[in-house]
Length: 543
Image 1 (cartoon, rainbow, N blue to C red):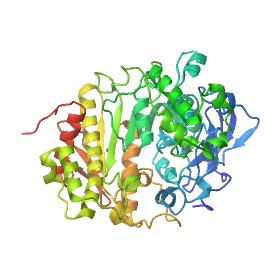
Image 2 (tube, rainbow, N blue to C red; image 1 turned 45 degrees about the horizontal axis):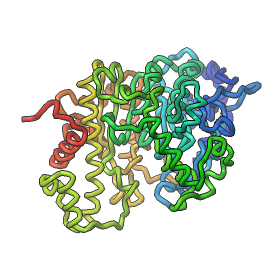
Image 3 (tube, rainbow, N blue to C red; image 1 turned 90 degrees about the horizontal axis):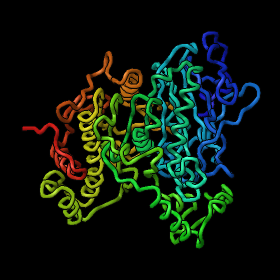
Image 4 (tube, rainbow, N blue to C red; image 1 turned 90 degrees about the vertical axis):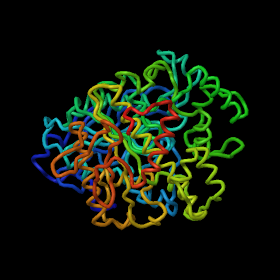
């Protein structure tokens, strides 16, 4: 996708002049053109200062100012991570990371964002979509090729992909950090980064033609979990007005998060075990940034970045950003006034843990079904051979995620007033690259919701079906960002789960309003399993 798409300057265009140069926190910036007429892109805008050295593990610092007009034609650095994690030749490398024009270097100067804007005037007051990338909260970045959002922005919204600190850089809690904090707490720094990015949007987006009073947050995979955590942060309320959760493991359902003080002690012990000695905050800050992605630690001989991530974990109850009460999204009124879009893919596990050559012993598969679903499971999932058993095992996990999304939406609507909730099921396998096995894999929906697919070398052999599906899905998304309702002229009616399961199934290039998948027995056993896991009852029992 290099070349014609990535032009360095904005072609003369009088109507774009009012948002050509924008004054933001830190100084003035000028955008560049995209492959879509009248959609400008501002790359690598800092919403906070560098996060290395003495600022490592500290809350986001103020933006460092610059002189003159910065031409925003270069992606900002990725947050610190292993940029070699997904090489070309492996599944994810071939899918998303094959084009170096979309892969900036990684550093601790990664607190930046991008702005795709179709505004013709700074006073246009366009709705804003703040996009949070996935990647397990240990990798990923805002300029990934599947987030190329010019076509999505052309539907009348401003798209703002943001970055945040990853792994231990974004989640370390320690007694020393809490002692140096004015709030007396630590941990959840990645979430504080995201709150800071939303505050930047509130304070700066008008210059790009955006409306700070009409902001939607969205994310996929770990980004979706981060969206769920922002819903749990009282400080973030008012900074956004609706939420999109793609492949949201756990959905909105109650989760037991560690408490800060217990986590601080646990982290200290884990770090001592990894390094073979107690590690002070000064010790951790003295480690050169490159060591995190070049040196190895522990019995598993992992890169330091991933060893520390495993040791530190992720979200905690810190009693500042997140409290025990705010963590419960199904409490009465928890989501009052928030609109929600949530869903899952039909084959979530093929790309994350699947092997096209994989098999499963039928006896082991039967034991899994009995343990997970009881006797009903053996009727819902009947395998013909070890290969089929293996693939059904993967599909069962994906089926469970759909029911988690549905139960989340139904119970959220029951417990919060003025909440619109829309659930989707993505069942439209992208073409090529062993589509027969991978199907509608985890992250495949990104190409469609973002309308980012292009007929370019390196991408899949997109068909008319795919382009039609992308236009439909991105239109639904843009409508939701504008009003909290994805429905609009020329689109099939997307129902809400008012009196039981109801959602849209994206398949074969079309949107189908449905109450179930093509496998109702699987829907039933997974729904029962989700309700039991979270101690919930059916809100609308069917006769």
